[in-house]
Image 1 (cartoon, helix red, strand yellow):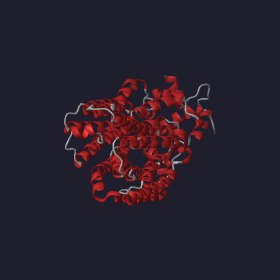
Image 2 (cartoon, helix red, strand yellow):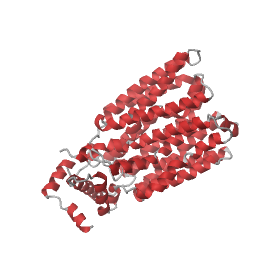
Image 3 (cartoon, rainbow, N blue to C red):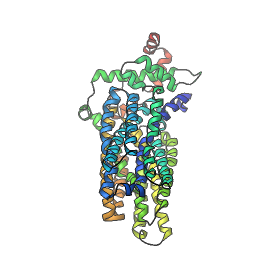
Image 4 (tube, rainbow, N blue to C red):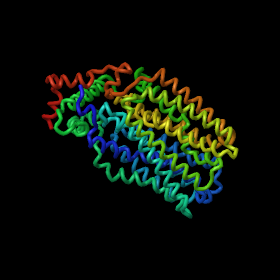
Length: 494
């Protein structure tokens, strides 16, 4: 059954998804800023001696803060709601940006990075959940994927801010980029009051009237028959009530229930393979990679700026097709192609890294850029889409928090060891990521189920859960036939 609701996303849903994703800029800006700031001469001189271990600490302590932020959001997103949790993250991000920009010694900078990581952990966990819960099933990949798109845009903007500030003098060269992190936090704080609550969270709180009103506004189209909207409301509410009647979910249910264990394993795997791809090693230390190829001066930050653009451009293609391509196929194909690209980068770096062959060095940089494009066509958006959509409402926040923490921990490890690994083994370090990308692709091919096009409630059937209502078309037929009275009762109480 095809309707306007099945083919388009209305303007209000777009506005909510895009505004929530402004908070996602924080992750991208924080990641991109540090990669350029640590290469600025004024920064290195101010914090001298800026040793490789200190450099690793400045980058990786951000991840330590993220771990605590993710776990906080795992509690807060359920207890306070997705909307209020995003607001809390914005306040903390604002404080972190001020701390970092005002740093007078390395300890203060690292403290600011930890606080900033806490804020980013909150956003990185909560925004994909929020956007997946406000999106219509047929376009959930597009709306939930906005988080990754804005992360990429934030990374690109940060790189260009770093490039521009490389021409500045004095401490402005690095203080302004760090202060720039406050901009998205301020935007979120100003506009958060107009963002609606997640209708699924409202239904879990038994605030049925508010939930129905928001679903109508999110998924309705002017002059359109609203039976599909009422069917969606009924499907969500009845499934949530059934689940609450069966058991009250806690942290232990993630491990004791077979269906939840399967969800958690898949969520952890997709987050782990995202980091094991090697993308953040390149993101954070790309200026060091360019130095190893003989690049110096403003060329380093210029290359970082161009590199930051290719990911968001490729991600737009992913968002456009993800709901037709599907999650599983895109992930495993991307994994194999990333392994091939990394092998080419390794071979070129080993063969021509210390030579005068400018053409070979140019191809090396091109394949580094291409790696970002390939990653953004697959993993970048999908790991943010896949994790919240395979989780049931009862465990969505908790399960997502564990999966994201695994992502962060692997990121911390790589951030700390990568400077040492590059110094000790050089280009051979890439061989690790060739192997991990192949393993990831094979695992996804054999273990991961496809979830595209299904409502969040219908996905439960894939994991063997009891689903008390049929798919949306079946429920809609009952609504049209007058067999579903509960929606009308809610409307009468309003």
